Length: 170
Image 1 (tube, rainbow, N blue to C red):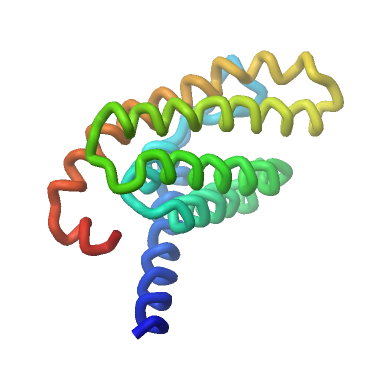
Image 2 (cartoon, one colour; image 1 turned 135 degrees about the vertical axis):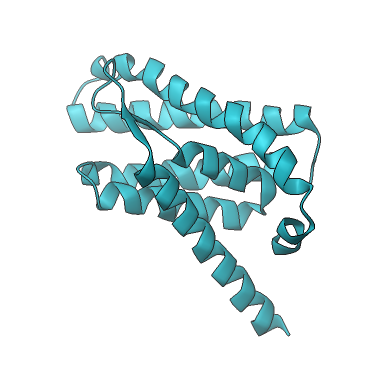
């Protein structure tokens, strides 16, 4: 029975990776005020996964889904950073929000994830660009990306939690 549960979890996690990748790939809006950044639907999917699924699943789905997008796009240099940042974000957000249908707790979880996103990409840019000043310009873009994803994921999560078949996947 344990092997069946592990296989089931692995299959669901793989589907979540695919959903996050597709969300990131399908809708991309370049941000003119950042260093090549994007606003994409992947954050909406990623944050929703974090609010619905256990920490390990959410972390792995986000890390692999968004990391794979970076690898297969012109942003490949970002892939290792994205993998680590999304892994940590997914674990932290999901741990705080785990099994809660309370709006305040879910919003708090997403707010706690914000400094991980901004700080993680700030450090990544500082490493890639070789200075600590240039990344300041990307903070607004990263915040916008978070705001759109968080703002959409809260109502979407509420709707999805009301669907019995979705709850069985968790």
